[in-house]
Image (cartoon, rainbow over all chains, first blue to last red; front, side):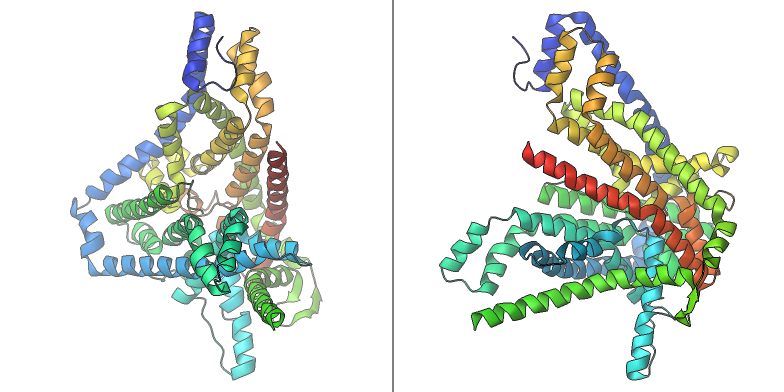
Length: 295
Length: 268
C-alpha cells in the first residue's frame, strides 16, 4: 500500500498515478494552473524589468563602463565607501545593543518585562520615512537631545540631518528586528552547558565569552546580515532627514530624478542590489536560516 | 557579596535596556502628543486639539484612502495568486519548487529603489498604466508575495497535509475540491498570518512607492514624506498619529497571532 505514514512527494505522486492515471494527470495540470498566475506576475513585473535594468545600465553613453564607474569615479566610489561604512557601523552597534538587551530580557523575569519587550519591538513595521521623523523629533532642530544639551551645557546639539542622524535612524530600525532574533536564539540555548562551564570554574565573563556568544553566532550572522543589507538599501529615512546625505540610495535617487542619468542610476541600482543580495545569500549559507532584508 | 554583585549587574543591564526602550519609545510618544497639542513649542500645557488631525484628513484623505485600497487589492492578489502557488510548490517539492521560491523571495534582498527603477524603465511607455494606482499595486504585489507564499508553505509543511490530501483523493475528490475543502481550511493559520503581514507591509511601503507613484497617486507613506518636508511639525505629527492608529492594531494582531500559533505548535 502506498501512502501510509508521511510519504515523500515523489512516492506520493507515483502512488496516486498507480491507483488511477487520470486523477494524477489532472493533479499535474491543476498544480500547473496553480503556479501559472504567479509565474506570469513574477516574469512580467520582476524578472523582465530586472533584466532590462541590467541592460539599461550598460546602454548609456559610456556603455559597460557605467558599471566600472561605480568603482572608478571618485564621487561614486566615495559614496559607496560611505554607505558600506555606515551599514557596517549600524550592524556592529545594533548587534552589541540587541545582544545585551536580548540576553537580559530572556534570562530575567520581572514585573513589567512584557511591556519592555513590547516597547523594544513595536517599531518593527515603521517605514523608513516614519523612522526619519522619529529621529528629527529626537535629534533635530526642535528635538529632545537639543533641548537637553541646551539646558545642560547651553549648547544645542543637532544631529539629525547628517550621517549621525542616519546612523541613529538605522539603529532605530534594526534594534527591534535583531532583538527578536537574539531573544529567540537565547531561548534555545542549552542552560546545562553554562552550568557545566560554571562547575568547571569559569567566571561569569568567561561563560559569556566562551559558551553563550559562540552559541549565538548563527543568530548574529543572520540578523547582522539583515541589518547590514537594510542599512545599505534603505531609502525612506535618508529621504526624510536630508536629501544631500551621501549614501548610495540617495545618489541613485538624485541621478535618476534630478540628473536624468538613467544609465548610471540603473548601474548603481544593479550594483547595490548585487551587494545586498550577496550579503544575505552568504549569511544564509553560513547561518542556514531564512534571511531577508526589510523595508 | 556575590548577591550584591549580581544585583549591580542586573541593575546595570536593566538601566541599559530601559535606555534603549526610551530611545525607541520617547520620539514616538512625543510625535503622538505633538499631533494633538495646540503648539509643539509650548508643549502639552497649550491644550489638546484635534485641529491638526482634521487638517491632515482635509489635505491627505485621498492618500490615506488610496493606501487602504491598494493594501486590500494587494491582499486580494496575493491570496488568489499566492495561496494556490504555495500549495503547488509544496506538493510538487524538489528542485523546481526551491528555485521558484528563491526567485519570488529575491525582491526582499534587492532594495525597493532598484526594483522601482526596473519597473519604471520597463513600463514608462505604457502611460496610462504607469500613471495609475495599478502600477503601485504591481510593486506591492511583487514585494509582499513572498510573505504570503512562505507563510502558507510553512503551515502546509507543519500540518500533515499530504496524508489529508491523499485521503480525500482516495475518496474520489477532484483536485479543485481538495484544494478548496482540505488544503485551504487546513492552511488558514498561515493564510491569516500572511494576510496580516501583506496588509501591514503594503500600508507602510515607501521605497518602491515613492518612485512608482505620481503626484496624483500618492499613498499614505509618500504623503507622510511630503508632510515632513513641507508641513508644520504639528500636522506632520498628526499624520504620523493617523498612521500609528492604522498600523498598531495590525501589529498587535500579528504578535498575538504569532504567540497563539507558537503555543499551538508547542502543544502538538
